[in-house]
Length: 124
Image (cartoon, rainbow, N blue to C red; front, top):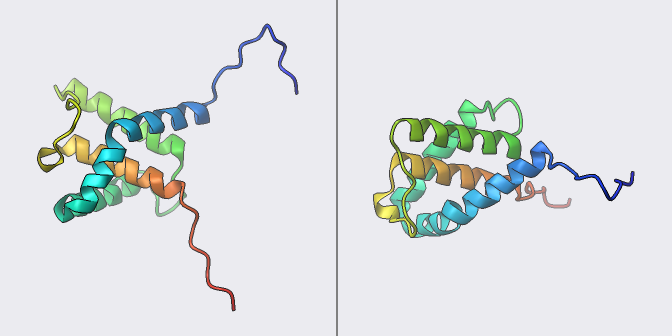
């Protein structure tokens, strides 16, 4: 299907979700996941938060999606900001990261897992 040149193509929900998650990864995920590999305590906290996010999105009953993760992160930030939370200035001190930042980092970890193909069994 060709779109006439005088029409603007609106981004889809999937486009919004992916864009939102890329923005989150650039702001939090890249440095945070690198810090977590060097800090076992942070890595354990991220794993616990990821499990909680997965549970809240019913990830045990249906596959996680970019839209679900982006919506979760967006809603969580909005709720945190209503209670006075402000995003940390870059660079983030991951040794002192608050609950919200660790939760956002967990969303980044889950997003990275979405983009990783499932392991295949070895050939027989």
